[in-house]
Length: 144
Image 1 (cartoon, rainbow, N blue to C red):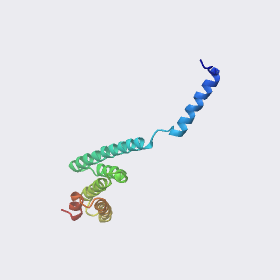
Image 2 (image 1 turned 30 degrees about the vertical axis):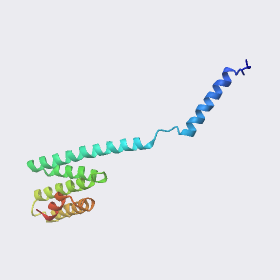
Image 3 (image 1 turned 90 degrees about the horizontal axis):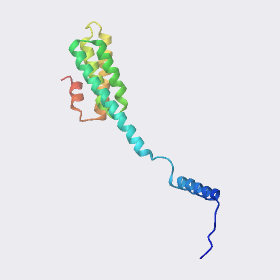
Image 4 (image 1 turned 90 degrees about the vertical axis):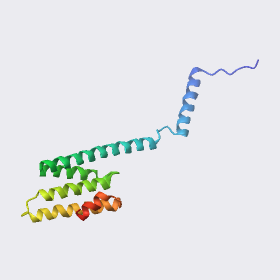
């Protein structure tokens, strides 16, 4: 029988810990960023979708009730979503809220109506730049 080297318990523990640290450093101890990034992106998309559903509902209800304040709120929410992955749709909804607001403003307040219409046109231009096949944006832009 060959003599076996006997290591103290402390030495064995130290070697095991060193091997573990070396393995973690060599293999990378942090979690991969891709899953976290895609999960974050999915959450942002879900939040944007939810916000845009609220905007759509708000515009419809505000139009039915004739509420200028609710249309302003819908436009604000839509503008918040213009930086997300549904930017074209968000710009379209901002323009739609502006268009509905312009119909609610008094005719004698021409300057305010003009500013609202210019804002709507800007959002429609941006929506069609992002998505050139967005029929609703083109239809609203042509006034049909």
